[in-house]
Length: 406
Image 1 (cartoon, rainbow, N blue to C red):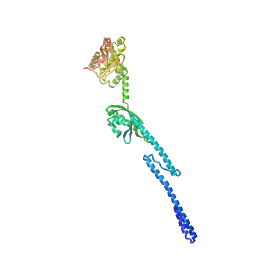
Image 2: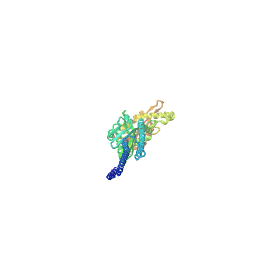
Image 3: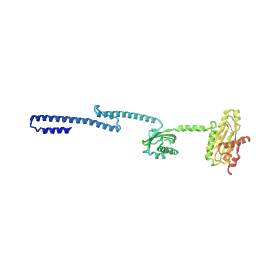
Image 4: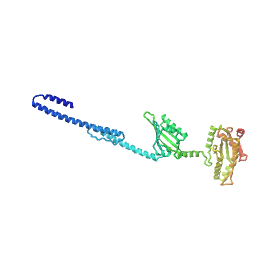
């Protein structure tokens, strides 16, 4: 535009060489007009360029600050120009971003407060830097460890707060995630700051990259020690006979068969069948309450006669069975004599009522290789003791011959 005006003025100046004065005056007027027009156009162009440049620079500056986390950025605009429409769109976008950011911060604060109130421990593990981060202060309070543990996989191998037998469980969990599994749950024993060991449940879910590779693990740690103790209490309760406190029949058979199957060949073992003498008469003449007391006291005294490794159970109304492990014939017969003495007693509630017992003994494997056959053999010779006058014991012939010579 400027070049056009300059060319026009040059042409007019060349024409002005004409000698006519009137014509020269006209040319001079035209030159002045063109100069003024050029000045006006130039000024308008500068103003227009500035009007476009300043909003553009402000917009770019606001974009950079917004990218750095300042979501309060806005740009003044005029709707009548195209740049104004762009600025309007930017401001609306920043309104949405700022509102969403406010909601995210609010949710994070709620989550933090919930995590602080809970005894559960939230954690995150990243494969890239092998770092585990904990987001609940309960982690440091309960276990006394830092909130961030770099080199976590190596630290796990020597961790003092994870039971030695359970460390491999967590190492295997990390390996399964790397092989593509998405969720894992493990139960391990962890040591708290007071030195006590607690059962903890560790839940973990993997977050994948767009390419499907394991990127992070997020999950929580929950103390389940009370639940474990209650489950163990219920398990033991289900195994025990409530009246005598000994194993019930099902558990006795299960434990005996399991031991003989796994360890029967190591040493000499005997199954002892025991029956309370005249128990039906006690029930009929003294009543069931006193009969129950006889069973309870008999169970206590019977249990006290054996080692913790032996299996002692009540297998019927007045019948009991014991598996003695790794014994000699002399030990077995001395134990039978001791039982006859220990189980001959009267109750404090009724000094006139005395109890005694008859005992039959079978040996593994000569008399049987499982509970059922051993108990049948022991029960047969037990009734030999009954017929011989009660309050005595009988060892099977096969059992007596099965022991090695002293």
